[in-house]
Length: 142
Ligand code: CMX
Ligand code: CO
View 1: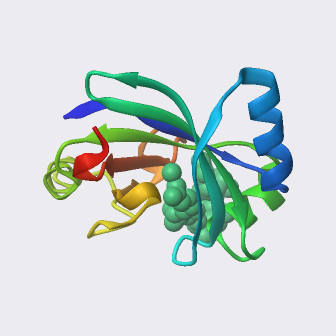
View 2 (view 1 turned 135 degrees about the vertical axis):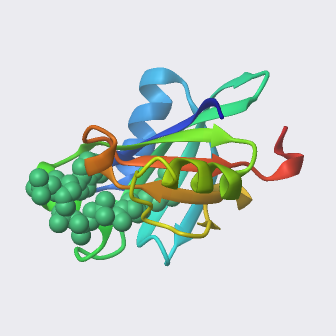
C-alpha cells in the first residue's frame, strides 16, 4: 500500500533560515514554497531524490499562528521531526483500509497538500507516537 517515503516534515521557527541551512549543508534544492491556510503553515519542499515510485522531499514547516498543529508542536517539543509522509497510489482507498484496522483518521477525506497532492493524516497515538501522513502525488509529477 505504501509506495515510498514521500517526505519528512520538520517543524521550525524560521522557514527561510532553515531553507538556507538545508541548501548550504546538504545541497538540497527548493521544489516549491507554499502557504497552506487550512494546515496553518508556511512551507517548503526540498527535493532529495527520485525513485521508481516518485520523488522524496524534506518538508520544512513554519506555523502561521501559535494555535495550529505545528505551532502547538513547537511550543511543546521545540524544533524537529513533526511527521512522516508516505506515498500511496490512492489516498481514499488507503484511508478506508487503514481506518478499518482501527487506526484513527484525522482526515476522513483527503485535503490539499503541497504541489497539488491529496493528503490525509493518521493519529500519532495510534501509530506509535508518529504523526503519519498519506500522500497521493499529483499525476503529472512523475
Ligand atoms: N507527532 C507525535 N505526537 C504528536 C504530534 C506529532 N506531530 N503532535 C501532537 N502529538 C501528541 C502530543 O504530544 C499529545 O500527546 P500527550 O497527550 O501524550 O501529551 C497528543 O498528541 C495531543 O497533542 P496536542 O498538543 O493536544 O495537539 P492536538 O491534539 O490539538 O493535535 C494532532 C494533535 C496530531 C491531532 C494535530 O496536530 C493534527 O491534526 N495534525 C494533522 C495536521 C498537521 O499536522 N498539519 C501540518 C502539516 C501539513 C503538511 O504536512 O502539509
Ligand atoms: Co507533510
